[in-house]
Amino acid sequence: MAVRQLPPIPPTVVAPAVGQRDRSALVLLQLSRYGPLAAAYAVFQSLVGVLPDSLSGDAARYGLAGTAGLSAGALVLLSALLARSRAEQRNTAQPAPATGADRSPGSLAPLLRGTTEALLRSRSTVDDPQQGRLTGWAHFIEESESGQRPTAIGTAYGLHTVLTLGGADGLLETSGLVDTLWRLRLPDGGWAARTGTGVGRPEVTALVLGALSRVGADSAGIADGVAALERMTAPGEDPEGLSRTYVVTAVMRGLLRAMPRSPLLGRLRTELVAGAVPDPEHGGLLCWGHSLRTGTSSHYQSLPSPAHTAHAVLALSRTARVLGEEGRSRHALDQAVAWLVENDRFTPQTEHLRRPAMPPAVGVDHAMISHFTAAWVAKALMSAGPEAVRGTPDLAGPLRSRLEQAVAEVYAQQRDGVWEWRNDREAQPLWMTYQGLAVLQAWALNGLGTTR
Image 1 (cartoon, rainbow, N blue to C red):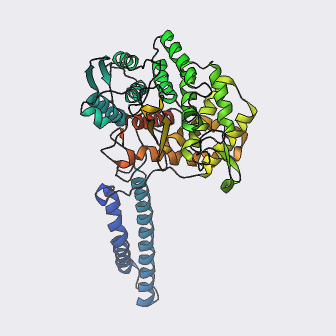
Image 2 (image 1 turned 45 degrees about the vertical axis):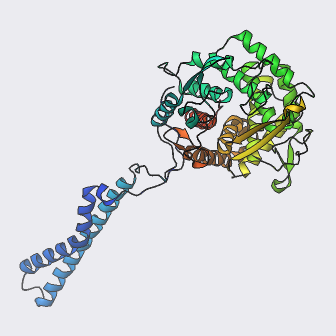
């Protein structure tokens, strides 16, 4: 990927230290203090010496010389102050030195290098007796650094990150990552989280299929994976999962990459729109919580959520480009964008999804889903922003302001190209680094354009 300079986010202004100022400004400072007095005295002495004695006596001669001296001093003072002001303006116009408090991104180049180095450093290879050689990442970068076994979720997000970086030198070996993802496929044709019970789950299967499609994996294998995904999302197969906003939108995003003409995409869009809820605290604007209103889950009364509303906006705006506009979907999308613009909450969220295992004797299938709220809000506003602004021109300024705020928040949560969950060096999820990097790349390319 070509190195881009990020469009400016309102910077933290840091005044230059005295040692960094133009030396001429210091000279002018001294001149403004002592120069006027020296000039006034010199003019006074000169005139007293040359004015004729016949000029109405000494009082008139000294008065005229004094007036001329004061005028000369005032002129020097004004000139020095003007020059000093211009010099200070030149100094303050220079770029401020980077500080820890500066949340404004500059060039992407150092960040990309940091991400690449972290991926190379943490990639692990394990020989599994059943699945063969696995090369990739676990869920967290620090886990992979310790040599833990690659997982489907970690390796899929790692592959997404490699593709976002560009991988021009081939050191990250995408072919090995693709091979690992196929090896991690379950007998039922899908993929699952490591905390699951060995049953393919739609949100994980959609994630892996999206990554494999993006790299140009075997089309027959992709089609077979989509068929498994469609079976998992058939009515009655996963009632708890398909009542969740995250699961439905994750499947939509995966289908948009792997099989955009699948009839499942249109059905999920309808279910997602029907699951929106009005928020009485924001004029009844439509938004989403973690569970869909029409779902079978007992938790459908969940509160409005910026992260889940952003998930829905992103899925609906991308789907509209493939399937075309649909009246109810467009209305819900516009309302949700306006809701996101009115909300400034970027707090990360964690959602616990429990599914009964089959057979029930196996227990319960657990999945902890963490939401990088600022990244999802930024992606949603960049994806839906142009259409929303065209429909409501008055929204343009507030939308841009909220987007800049979200992007600044995304940038602030990384160190040297690695994103940290709640600023914890011991919690560096690979999915978070991918999402943060994707946001900054999209912002650099086109602040209000589409984003991956």
